[in-house]
Length: 110
Length: 116
Image 1 (cartoon, helix red, strand yellow):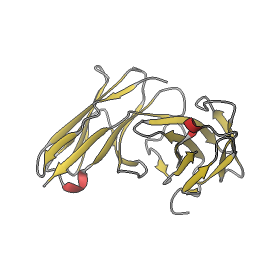
Image 2 (cartoon, chains in turn cyan, blue):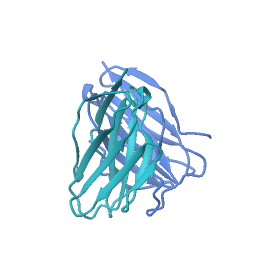
Image 3 (tube, helix red, strand yellow):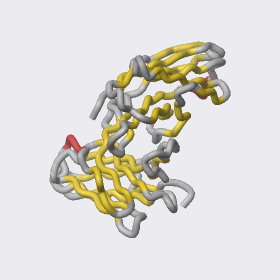
Image 4 (cartoon, chains in turn red, brown):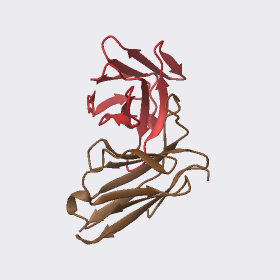
């Protein structure tokens, strides 16, 4: 399967900070893109889909650059509850599975 | 059901024994996936079901691993002659995915398998 690469971190940021995560994917034919969140010893949960034009959900903004095969997630006004591992996820044009990156760890401190 | 249900939540087994892991997907979800996550690793795809058929089983690591799905609902992942390297969290997910949907997956809480 094709690669999805993320900086593992950890990213340690104070409450209220803005933090950005990046992800690159190797298959230019990739079709769909997502960010998932995984808390310690819990299952991954869908945070947001990523659309070509970029999209925002509250404090979270996702961007996709197909030419550079690059996805980003921006978190504004970080909360303690944002502490988790953020997984970049890509679906290829062919095949059925979602391909997960290994995740970026975020710790928001008081 | 309201979510994806997996059982057991924890399983400790002796090396060489067989284990069965169960997944009950969200009602009406036709697509079902098994992944596993080893300590500190990313999610590794194992198998995909659409209805009762498995068009993609390319992620099964060896012939000791098998899975089935009946009635388009419950799925069982079986690991025969377990080895210590099989220790991981086995996650099941379901989706209404039909190939073009952007809805992503809903995961169960997983089965933590420890082979001793």
